[in-house]
Length: 229
Image (cartoon, rainbow, N blue to C red):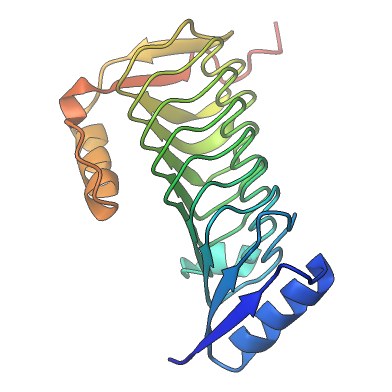
């Protein structure tokens, strides 16, 4: 597979994404530099491989993948960011893999239906809010309101969390190895099962994260219909 380098410094978002799509359609791997001021880079792509050198703006990788890819268990696009990522990373993603080799801003993985987001640093508030079915892994600490209104999927945190972890969670699961300042409404801590341990070992091992699974705690809903009396 050949490579195409895109310098985003003097390009509009529309121009950058058009060049990314054109290169992917021709079978090239795409490398992007100077993307810190680009908001929405690689939005809506459903295949190919994109690597970003340096930091990236907000809403990168939003709407990536397609419902059909998730339903068929297909991989979707792969996006690697060799720097920090802004807020709303992988918003509404359906499939694919987004890897951040730095830290990320607020609200990563919001509404994500499928795929995997991995952050090797810290992340901000609202990680995995309204998560539908994706997997979000943060190899560091996170802020407040992680998993707010989460209905499916998995959030893994190897560090600490702020206030209201799992606030109004109605589905899915959160695993945390560090401390949290407090659980949110409808969130409860339960013991890990053998299946949980195997799942964590597989996820952490796949991404080279060296954290003992026995140190994790699991957060799930108390009620599956908390808004109904």
